[in-house]
Image 1 (cartoon, rainbow, N blue to C red):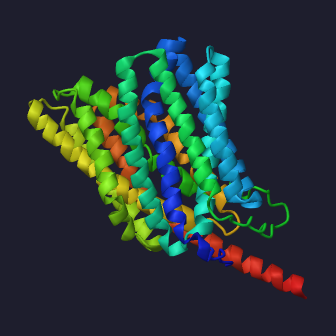
Image 2 (image 1 turned 120 degrees about the horizontal axis):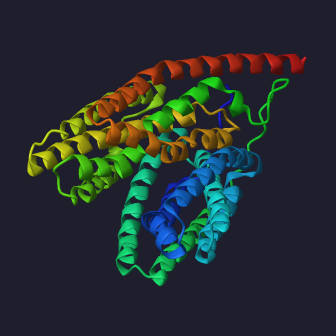
Image 3 (image 1 turned 90 degrees about the vertical axis):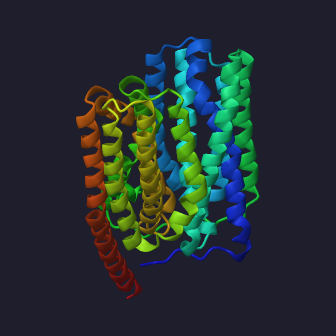
Length: 421
């Protein structure tokens, strides 16, 4: 199998620059996430149904486009592609300042989601070109910690805008987010260039986007999306559960969010260092599935009236188990997504693998709220079972992908030998 070229020596400071780029747009995104829905509903006047429909359609478009933009990063160079997409994201956010109706909102949201999805894929390809393979998981863990820190700071700033409740306050948040992506583009522009990857030799009839026919990788992408159902669980379903089905006070929702983000900031790097290679990655994902089942079972206990403070303690235990599973899954998922992406196609493969996030964020809320808020305890146990099964199935799926890579390497070697003669 052809190995990816070693990162250039002058890229030794790349991780620090990547962290700064992540922080610059994470702060703006944190403020944007907590204010955007209320701005479009209360200030612009869009209905909740239209906002939800618009965002679902936008992220559906962005998920598909992210694969193509990842392929573009492979062929044209990830640094220039990432810079252009950061600028496009800034422009899309800035356009929200002038939105007054649904159709412009839908168009701007689609551009925003497309640029964000493509930027994520291009950044992964850029990281692969600048960071040694042995250091990638640790760098990704640091990026995740910085992301959480930035989102937390941004959420605090967004809270100030919500408290003010004025149009000017909301627009200041959008301006902050747009400025963050401009800074991100500037920082990425200062990184060493990464040469476009040479196009891999394609078999007869193989599509340009080979990832679309890579069934083992597609299965792993699906399994990753199922594990990512923990995202709407924390941000939507659990808050609704706490308010509607438990005796815990409402402030617990914020406390659990702080617990999650704080734990990731403090321990994600430490957890990721222990996950090396595909065998370690599959063990981490399998353990994450089992711990998520335990977390769901603990949360289900709070359906019983235990009293406010006992309920708070049980919820804290469930949240602690959840964040342990989150950090394990993240570390294992990063390894799987990178190691099994062929050299020369990291951008398009990461663009495809990354679709799990928007899929979980758009379709996940419907699933987890139906399971938990509607079904209650059986829903918690069923969701936990999904996490457990997903973690278990990941290991044979990885072995399938490894066998497919080995066969492809043999076929590629035979093709080169025939061409040489």
